[in-house]
Image 1 (cartoon, one colour):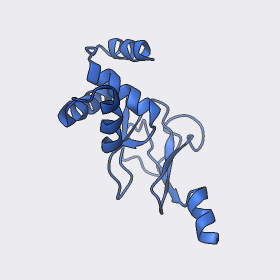
Image 2 (tube, rainbow, N blue to C red):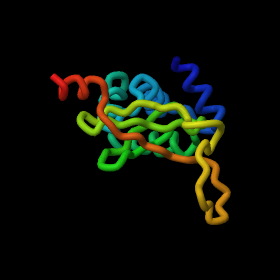
Image 3 (cartoon, helix red, strand yellow):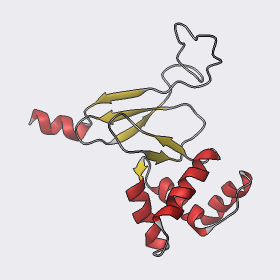
Length: 141
């Protein structure tokens, strides 16, 4: 997997560094992870990596399109490796778990604005809210 991450970095014209490879590995292993979880995961392999190195890597990888940053209302920023397909998210109002939801209909932006204000729209970001199965069953018990 490390060689795959190195190829991703090279393909994005980024320098291959141990923190960047470790951050990619952490995000791929922990979809929708927040920075605290990513830092803990990275430090399993790189115990002395700084918070700043992880933040810098997340910023660089997001800018390069290798990761996607999402921040549901009222939540901390989270990162995912599923990029470029205009998918959406469902968030549990109780525990905060986030899951992917494929595009509502058709191709990006998959929703049509009633008035696009002359913008050239290429993405629609939708967040669905509700209760996850675990929280739903807890409430009905």
